[in-house]
Length: 67
Figure (tube, rainbow, N blue to C red):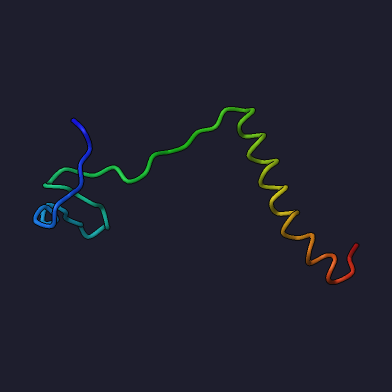
């Protein structure tokens, strides 16, 4: 089945319970999926996160004369 847009008259099919879970016509809607990384991907993500943090910290260090 090809994806299509939802019409205004179909919005009545959405429901939310007291815990904040979303339902479509009585069936639970999956809103999140756990992401798992393999070893090399985890290493790359860690290096990228450290690089991003350091690139954000560098202007402050220059401004305050830390280096």
